[in-house]
Length: 276
Ligand code: C2E
Ligand code: CA
Ligand code: CA
Ligand code: CA
Image (spheres, rainbow, N blue to C red):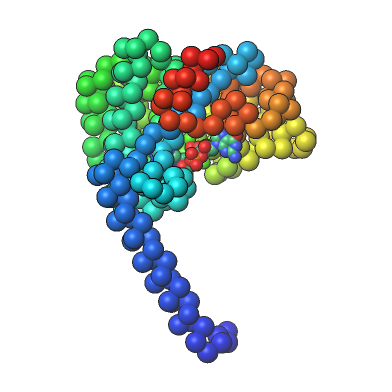
């Protein structure tokens, strides 16, 4: 058996207990935050690669505790995902998003289609499709303007069940996008079986696309796959002109990234759109 320094396992357990305690604290605070309206939708524009024409926005959640710095989703979404809290947050995000889409359309300054991130637990929850269906009756302007982004992990958790769900979602007039495409699994065979509309190419492939021939080759390959399967594509995390130029050379249709715009609150988005 391995020798363990005296007391080290005690320390380890204490550290684990602290970690659990901290996650519980955040989870409770987050529940309060949801009730106290401290969550806010930010929006990041998506453009056509060829001519920078505005295509749509992705909704990215922020937690803005009063008097404190905004907390990025990476710090609280994974904790919310451990419990059904993610379903409450996800329902709230969808409802808020639909309400924004409806009001933008009424005001005549729609940013194009709107993409929302959906977590696995939420996607697979019993009432997901019926709630979505009800939401679209409440906000009819959203029906053909909403895209749901799910990761490969969400789908492969239960392929058969995912296919049923995705078919029902498509029947509602909602589009489906695979987020972080290429990062999770080596086989893309599941794409044949699912009613998917779009692939989002992960930033990790885009980051060095103008410097590393290997990365460029991977993107070229994924674009060809998308083309054959008639899927649209959005490249994520484009930060520089050389990255964008490489995407243009490869005929990548769409992108989002700090090069053009960071995620921003609604008022800034409307100003940004007006300035385009
Ligand atoms: P994601 O869906 O892959 O979103 C893209 C992330 O990349 C966002 O981080 C965005 O701000 C960031 N990003 C965009 N352009 C650039 C760029 O040019 N450079 C760099 N370095 N980053 C860029 P963010 O907003 O911190 O969100 C992180 C993740 O949190 C998201 O990753 C998504 O998985 C999750 N998330 C955000 N909002 C929601 C939500 O409403 N529901 C759920 N379930 N998850 C969400
Ligand atoms: Ca996303
Ligand atoms: Ca992504
Ligand atoms: Ca991601």
